Length: 355
Image 1: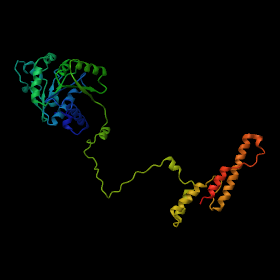
Image 2: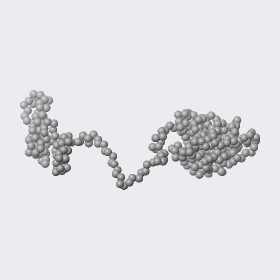
Image 3: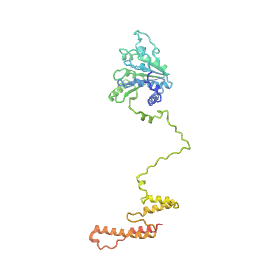
Image 4: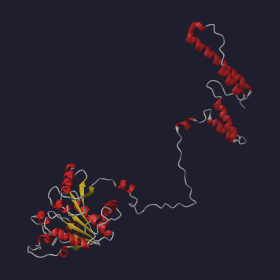
């Protein structure tokens, strides 16, 4: 068996999980039926329908479901190459009643079904390539075949020919429960997909969905989303004695600008050299420093100097107000008397009460 059966060779891979998800979706679409019949087809060739059929059938068999895959592509069959078993006798031999040496023979369907290396998975190969596959599918033997396999298998999957090139899959789609269209990324044309859907619906077939094949996804991105991808995953158990580092908190612009502006190095030095000074007293000194800081005036240290400091500031403020008014109004206010400053007096009173 080739490595194309990735669901068997690497069952924990992300691709295998995708096939299991597809299997689950199809199972819930027709839970009441004793036997579920599916057709896997594509619009044109080389879109990966045979590969999807083989892996999907393998996922059904892995659950203990007795599964039969029928290679219904009697023009370019591939399933016998994937599972590496003889191709004759097969599907075409049963429908035509002609054995592998060209003689007419009443062939039983169970003489054509072959075991595979996968438990619960069986294969009906395509058989000899006939000159008229579409006519063989129109015969009543196809309906008899479905009746026989439905009584002996839980799931039957047809690997059909591309439905835009020939009518084989269109004929089978009207007899099965669901049809799945396989498309290829950046290869299948949207118009071809619409035409394939139209043909299947016109004959009474039911399309279960579309499989998009060959999508380019990096392994690293897939492993981040799929937690089964690595078997050497680190343990999540943490010992109680281990110290957990707290993440470093990044200060925003407001917090960075709120640092002490009045020589923080000197304050730090004072704290280190004067151990008797408490933290509360240092914070109080720093608050006073920020409150009374001015560009050209030094910070007052003693409370009796505060009154003189404020009176000077009030006078300076009144002079500035007087100059601004004179500047804006001209000679009209040249004889202006002293401008009262109620706001300045209010500030003065509040600062005098400060302790």
